[in-house]
Length: 567
Ligand SMILES: *[C@@H]1O[C@H](CO)[C@@H](O)[C@H](O)[C@H]1NC(C)=O
Image (cartoon, rainbow, N blue to C red; front, side):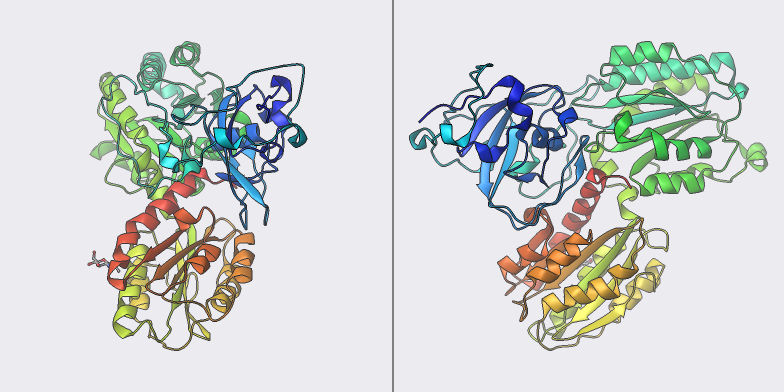
């Protein structure tokens, strides 16, 4: 029985499968990201994955390296590749062993083989050299025994803001999204000639104060600046401290020209939030637009596209148009058209330039309210959602009404239109029936009516065939810029096999949720659901409890939205 010894220069390519221990600590060197070692999965990784690259992908460490706890887990049937923190992981259908990574703080009661004894000259991490030390490794207690890192909060905000509930916290979530105010934040400055030197200076002072207040850092917010030409003044990854950002802001000079906010938002959407320029993937993208008066071009279309790709847009309008000036506007109500319609959360009108400073605190507070960001309209308006509804005899007429209520309640949360979210529905027994296709009803009232009118069918239960049918009838007609979401609702075991149909839709990029009621089979629910199952598979013992999962599904869809690779 030998202790785990890793050499510091070899560890970017260490694969978890090479180390035959249930739980151990690895110290990752810096710059593993550049080595592009293969990683398979998200949250839970196949054991052939590089530990250090998986740790960067999970947000447990940055590219600067650090200690990582590795915990082995059972093999999975599917590993889904995603893009996160600049590491693109791959998908894998099946592997015999998995692992998850956690922040490298040794856990009480567990004796680790070495934390870590570095012997730089002898790479001895081959399996053959190692035997497990069973007595040292008692079965690990449940994942909640990991205490997340204590959080630190920037000065003006006294307490942590409530987070979206993710249900029971799975171990693989630790280290992602746990940091306070972890946002990728860009400011679009108004550099047009019309505002003059003095007001340009007030803008710079404002940005400097925001940088100071928000506490820039790699574990928290990263901040950049674009001037309305558009031109990148400060990229997201340029500076990792408030002091450096402030110094860089101070050096910005006024570009002049017009205030083409629409054009600048397109630029930001296409070029600014790219992996190459520091988009972290795991952090919500936020752009704050500063406008003196009103823009000289239209903003609606560019804003919508930016929001659909996951960018949260805030507008700070300074000395906006009054009644007499409204006829001068290129686009009436440009702020309402640009931001999500969420009770003014995303717009901050400031009546005079001298009052701009007062907007720092409220703005920082909103920008850091990451729950509101991930739960904002951005995630509610770019989906094709297919409901696959079990109409078998065991459900019964009354319960079927409850299921339809559930479908309606979930639907009601989304922005419904051809360019926002579209909803389709399939009912199934032994057979399948298309109740309505994506886009058949393109406003909320009509859609809710159509849901209400679905007639209960009654018959057998072939869930597998129904999933295939949904893929053929609905998802084959999905639009490329929409996220494809399938929500399967069933109350019993399927007569046919769900595995192959489920795998096929997963491979098409459909995010699958399964909701089981009463006699639904747990194993089937898990086959249907996208990994991790905990976040995509729900079970209720009776129909009357279905309502409980409406907010959960919405939050999950929103949360996932921000962690998806941009297309
Ligand atoms: C749907 O929403 C209504 C109104 O909020 C609520 O009374 C009902 O219990 C909900 N039902 C389900 C199944 O979600």
